[in-house]
Amino acid sequence: MSIAAISLISFYLAFGGYLATIFSCLLKKERVAEVFFVVGFISHTVSQITRAWYLGFFFPNPMVNEISFLPWCLAALGLGLRLWKKEVWPRTLIPVFFFSLITMLSPKGILPPFPKNQTFLSPLFFGSEVFAHACFILGSWFAIFYLRKKEGCRIFNDLVIWGFVFFSVSQIVGALWAYLGWGSPFHWSDRHLGSAGLWCYYAAYLHLSFVARWDLRRRAWVAILGFFLIVAFSWDYQFTEFRQMIGG
Image 1 (cartoon, rainbow, N blue to C red):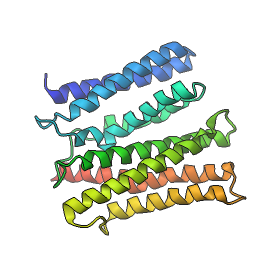
Image 2 (image 1 turned 135 degrees about the vertical axis):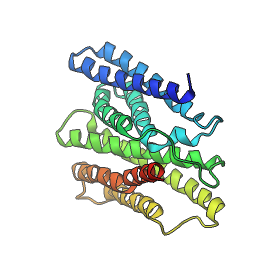
Image 3 (image 1 turned 60 degrees about the vertical axis):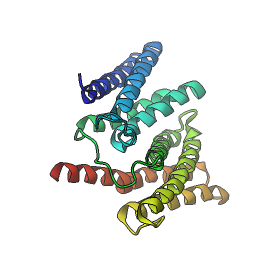
């Protein structure tokens, strides 16, 4: 069996595990749901690791491609919340399942290597950026529940803060990587401008805490709107890359 087949089958098992977790929660079988979720996450981890061997040698970039890595990050955050805030972790299941479904429906394959991808800065940049996106997305999701006055969902603010930390790391690493590849830490391209715009948006969000009339409820709306910026600036770019790869 090829590495690609193992990766694909492992992801299908992960998707099945996440789906079974949702059904178990609907049936109020919490223990069973937790088992299915852990099995799904382990299978998903195997799928991500084996993606690094798609080209016949170890190349880490496919492991952190956003299409497949984002649902893994969401699932990892879900496991963390299971240990930290057990009462809210089931609410992570819908985002995990939704983005896993997008992965299922996306074109199969990997993006070709780019110049300077061999440096460790490349997977570090993509990994920290995608994990930040996962924090922002989960933060926007919990912000919806917070506005509905669900217990424990003020955690959305913590998720956004951690997302900003990881996104800032990704921007620093990305600037170093860009300098090695192009001799400049920043390019006036859609990709770089989108990243800068997203960073400024969440930097502004953090500064709202110093404005008296912007209480946590109002900031929840800002967190929710951030989801649409991520889709506009990041996911459109991801699918454009796939279309270019398929269309040649």
